Length: 135
Length: 351
Image (cartoon, rainbow over all chains, first blue to last red; front, top):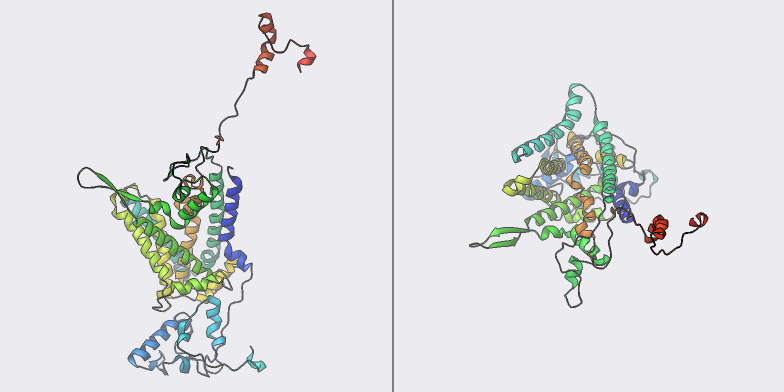
């Protein structure tokens, strides 16, 4: 090979850069995050599959509806009426009360930074003192 | 091959490629109950990445074996010459004799696509004159395409690393600067599609370019466009279970592959097309990613007048020295009365 040294160094630099995810994670994949589902309330405003992929679009519709049209009532597919409110409906005490145990789990895992919290204040979580609250 | 045929062929191949995962992941389970997610999510991506790396290394080594016997001085600036001939910074960069100059020229080429920037268009001016006008559109389209593609690829690191490297959230924040639509629209994706469309239209609308464009030119454009479209559709329209997808991609990079439940077909379509791009890469013009570093007009200093460069494929010269000649003909020379430097020796001393 002509200029073999330089070319091999170039190949090695290229390989190191292109395999970045492999050596950066070095075989350590954290477990798939599990969200803490509410204990009592079993019925969300939409199905689990819908909420999994489209919750942000629903919240966006809610925001537009409340802020721009002043329409606060949401009728779920099963006929139940809900108040369109992130803090008072979604994150009420009976449902997803804790941002860190629900929202953040998947958002942190997939590197999503939603801008909900630019305006909203997440519900206050009790300081983690009680042992049963830890997990 | 004419333009229409090239377009039909490359478009047809990409359509077939789109149909394969649709059939494999969507139709087969519905009709026959066969599940091929493992094939499209694990086997094909691994194969494609192996072909990608082995192919690139093989190709670069093959290129490395080609001798570059002389420096190519056909560059755009004055060669280093006599002290009173101007050799300033521009000349040092464009016609370098030092390694630093070569590195500078390479950086400008690799990061700023300088040779595209110097593109000109020949036009007939008024009357008989020919004018050379600068033509920056190709450069602009290429810059937009390559940098958006880079940003898109870096953004995808969020699926392949945990925790993410520090620059990924920064890139995402800048990329989603305008904060419209939900999920936030990344400008790079849209710009990438726009740049690709421009590069495609450029080939289609300019008769001269259309004449020289081949399947090998259209196919990568169509393929990358299809990748961009499936990605955009997956993010903004059809939606996908991102947590499951990350579980799959993390399984791939940590060599513990898994196929989680509930990943939609559009994801398999996206990853299949990306796998095809990876596998096609070493056989295609896309190898300019590695090849740009081996461009002799860019990476060789023009020091032909300073250093002697010997053609490496010259055969070793055969000499017949006077001493050897005399050894061959000494007796005959002495017989003929010619002067010799060494007298005839005894057979033992001949050695």
